[in-house]
Structures are given as structure tokens and as C-alpha cells.
Length: 536
Image (tube, rainbow, N blue to C red; front, side, top):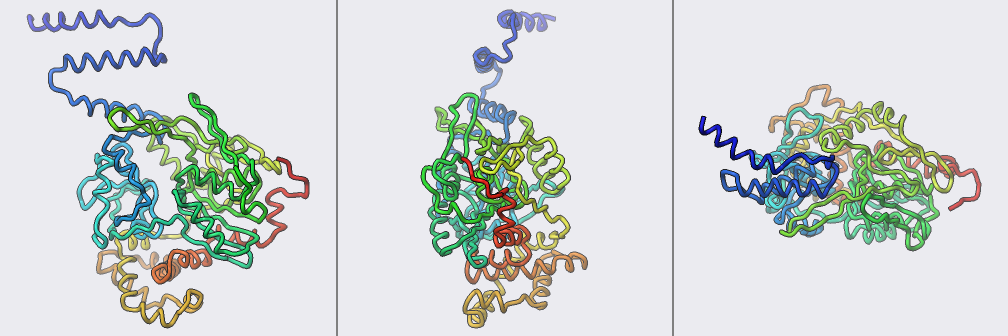
């Protein structure tokens, strides 16, 4: 009984000192800040054991940010050192751009032509183990040490992918990481150029201008932004400038506590009159959406593909006193017509945010249902109706082909079987191929993947424990032959030739863009060009 009385006496003074406020201060930031400081002072002065105050504060910051939008984040002082390293540097590794969210390594982008792309890692994959050891809870500063390593060394990644019940295993062989951002640039048909941009980095527009110059005179262009998750804002703005007259609004920002900013083209674009088709898909995000939105809103070209990701939040990186930093969402991006690029989300529901994207990507009916309530806007020159509600909706939607069965191919890719087969094949046949096909044109016209090659690939998979059902083999055989040929071309030349093969072999978005650009009348009709004078 004496102990109980003592506890009551010890608690009563504190209770008396913390009487409920007479008015509701739940939305008063100054009051809530004072409340938290009061709690923290009591905790440090009275808690029974020694506290790790630094970890408690970091956990509190992370916890608060996790209740907000999907893209606000915290980085410790050590993590900031890694972030500040240039991603464009030369190193050997697995070739991913990553983030750490909720103590989990998230793949933001895979470097085209890099080891991770070759084995089938995808943006938004979560790396949960490295060489059998859990990677959950690692700091951002620790990630390069886990993923980078000597060229030729192997690493096994355990990956959680939304929509997959089991973790996936990827065997990745580290290699020198290519740093280019232009994957391909070539003349796709007389007078029609094609350029594929994988991300927006510091050298993107320098590379883009050089690639455009290599095309020679063209009257039409296919700009492929599929799989491009964004990057540097200034490069996305500069790419938009390439296609627009001087003074054109490109993107604007709007926020509660920051000055609204409008970005306009500062000079006449280099390609303001030729026909233009922009290809996007569900992985096109941020900078890609800025470019596609500006092109669409100014009726400058047609957008083809699937609805983009819908990532249009502006983060401001704010340094804290110990060298750490928070990236806080301060504004939203708007296209020139006023559409908000960011798709809707529920604060704190990061899993739901990404699952909604997956469902929208795979189920066209679900995406259509979202469009029924989407606000409408008008384009700025022709007054065409475009939909808001998040992301960029194409002028010509090409639904994702969900009928194909890639499961066997994906297992071969994840297991490193495709890479192993091609490397072994080229060790044996490179000299003969070079003699037989002195140019890519000769290779494209004359080389075919033989039944012996596919049987050898299947046998290698069998030896590595990867089997296919008869149905899987029959369903995937044409695609296996196509991609083997394209990957061999990439090894013999570069990624330019890879895309020349894959684009010309049934790529539906590419085919539709080429068809449209070859028909000026159909192109003009789609843009609502009835001969009326344009207005700005």
C-alpha cells in the first residue's frame, strides 16, 4: 500500500502542471511544438534508463514524414554524404538509382544497359536481402557498400515486388555502369527520327542535342520517354524548350507556404514546327510528365501510350544542424493548362499509393473508371479537351498487352541465365559474326536465332533449375528469339541497335507513332487542326 501511495504522489504534481487547455489547440503549430518540447524534456530528465536521444529524434522525424505524402523523406548525416555523390560518376556496380523509404531499399531507376536492367529489376522493386542477408533497416549511406563491387563479381538480391506473393531472387553480375541518358537515336523512316531518353541527368540535353544533330534533317520525331522516371527539373524544362516557341509556359508550381513559380521557355526551340510524337507509359514520371504535359497542352505533338505515373510533387531539401536533411514536399507541379500532375494519395498510405499504381497499370477497366470523374481542361492552341486528375493521359491510348506470358523469360532473366548464355555464345561466335555481318544492317537483315540456340538456352536453364511448361515455351518462343537477337546486337554494337530491333518487331506504341507521323493529315486531325489560326 505504501508503494501505491508513493506513485500517486509522484504523478500528481505533473498532472496538475499539465491541465487541459481551455481551447482547442490541435491545429496550433506553436502550441504543439511546445507540447513536444515539454514531453522530450520530461523524458530525458525522468526516464529510468539512459536514452539514445539522437535515434529517438530521427525516429520521430521519420514517423512524422511517413504520415504525409509518399515522397517526403529524411536522410541522416551519413546518408547525405552518399546522396551528394554524383550518380553520373564512373564505378562498377549493379546499375540502379535507389532511395531508402521506411528502412527499405527502393529501386528508383535501373540504368539502361546496366546489370540490373539485364536481369529484370524494375523501378519500385524493394531490395530486401543481399547475398542472403536481410537488407531491411540499412541506412542510405550503407547501400553503395552493399551493391557496388569489383567488375565481374556476383551478388544475389532478394526482391519484394508488388503483385508477387513470394520474394524474387536475382543473380546480378557487377559491371562498369554506363552513364549516358540517351539510349538510342536513329532515323526510323525517311524524314522521321527516333530518340529514347532514359532519365533527366546533368548531361541529358547536351546528349540530346548531339543525338538530334546525328539524325540529320528530319521533318518528324518520335520522343520515347517510356520508363523514364524523371530526374533534374532544369533538364526537363530545357527539353520542353526544344519543341516550343520562346515565352511558352512549360510548368508552374503552387504551394501553401512557398512562392508560386512559372517556368517559361527562354529561347526559340530548335524543333518547333516538325511533327512530334511522345511515347509514355506507367513508369514515365516527374520530368517525363512535365515534357509530355507541355507538348500536349500546347498542341505541339501527340502523346501515345499508357497513362503516366502521376508524380508531380516538388520537394525542397532542407539541411538540419547535424548535417542531416529533410526533403519536404512544398508544392505541386501544374501543366500549362493548369492540370495537377500528382495523382491522388492518402497521407501515410505508401503501400496503397503504389498498389493503386499497379492496379491502374494492369487493369485498363480500373484506369477507365478513374477517368470518369476526372476534371477536364482545354489545350491552349486548339482547345482540345484533356483530362486532369493526376498523370498525363495520352491522346492515343495503347492498352498494356496483358495476354502475353513472360513468366518463363522473366525467370531466366532473374536467374542470370540470359546473360550467361549470351556471354558464352559471343565468346565462341563473336569473330564469326563480325566476319559474316560487317554492319548492323547486314546483321538485322541476315541474322536469325536458330532452334539450336533456343534449345541450348533451355538446357542451360534446366541445369540451373529453371524449367518451362510446354505452354510457356510455345507462348514465349517468338519473344525469346526477338530479345536474344536484340541483346546480341547490343553486345556487338550498343543500345541503339537493341532498340532498332525491338522497335521494328511489333512495338505497338512505336508502330502507331510511326504510322501517324507518316500521315500528316491524320496527325493534324488528331491535334484538332482545322486550319484555324493558332492563338497563344
